[in-house]
Each structure stands twice: as C-alpha cells, then as structure tokens.
Amino acid sequence: MPVIALATDLPGSGRRAYVGPDDRAGGRVAGDLMGRFLGDSGGDVAMIAGLFSVVGQKAREIGFREALAKHYPTCRLSSVLQSGEIPERAGLLTLQALNENPAIRGIYHATSGASEVVEALASAKRGRAVALISHELTAERRALLKARAIDAVIDQNPEFEVRAAVELMARLLGRMEGAQDNVITPVQIYCPENV
Image (cartoon, rainbow, N blue to C red; front, side):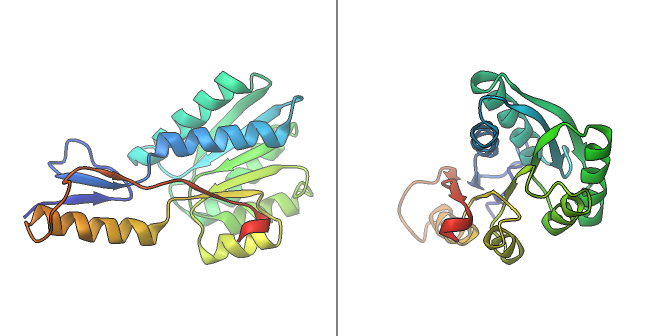
C-alpha cells in the first residue's frame, strides 16, 4: 500500500509522495511580509514555533531568516522560541520575549496558540504596536484577522491538500491517470480585508 505524507513531509520514511506546502517558501513569504510591515526602520522580531523536530516548522524558520537577511537587513530575528505545540505556552513565550526585549516590533507565529499570542500582546499593551503574522486560516484566526488582532495569515488551503492527496492516491493505485509526484500546495495570504 503506497503512503502519502500530508501537510508535513516525512523524508526518509519510505513515503511515495508528499502533498502539502513548501514550508521554506511559506517562511520566506512571512519574512517578506514582516519586512514590509516594519518598513525601512526594521526592528527586532520574535518567532514562536511549535517543534523544530517537525520538518515544516524548521523549514519555516529557515525561509523566514533567508528573506530577512536577503531583503530586510534592518530586521533582526532576536529570539526563536518553541512552544511544543502547546497553545498556552505560545502565549507565555510571547510575554517572555516582550519582557526580555521591549524593542520587539514583530512576531512570526508559526504554530498553535494564536489567541494566546494575541492575549499576551494585549496584556503587554503592545497589540497594535507589534506586527503579527501567523499560519493556517482556522476559524479562530479568521476571527482574529477580522478583529485586526493579526496582520496576516499564510494558508496552505487544507481542502485542496485533501483533494490532491485523494487524487494522488487514486493515481498511485492505478485507478486514475496522471502524475504520481509530490503536490506542492499554493501559498495564500489573508489580511483583514480579504477574509
């Protein structure tokens, strides 16, 4: 039975194909957005990741660093913290980063816990002063975008991923014709005005 990795690649696992985002490219998009949001003056940025043992999380950090280094030299990634995919911890890490470095002007949130990060920014009275970029357009993040608590969400279109995975499995099983290669999902950017 062929195996497809969905949403996060599992290189070296024996999987036949991968369906999901290019997380490094997603990180580069986040870096580009952050640089544009912060402008010429740039500033310090914190990244709240989940677990770097998850291939996609590490790839997002690499892409984010690449974009900042290449295009926005006045933006500095001052801290990279791992929440362990625990939403409450994402909020606590946000407060920790803000307390340790009051100069933070941006947060790249690449994991669970968007509401907790927003609450941490509000409790530190920094909500509108800090650009916040996240991933995955969940119902929670859609509401936070509409409330302008998040500046941008980078999404990988999970409905498309599932459809593409089902079609790819059908091709791998000989029930459908077509390519049997990886399917990289397109990156979509959502801001308060297009949710």
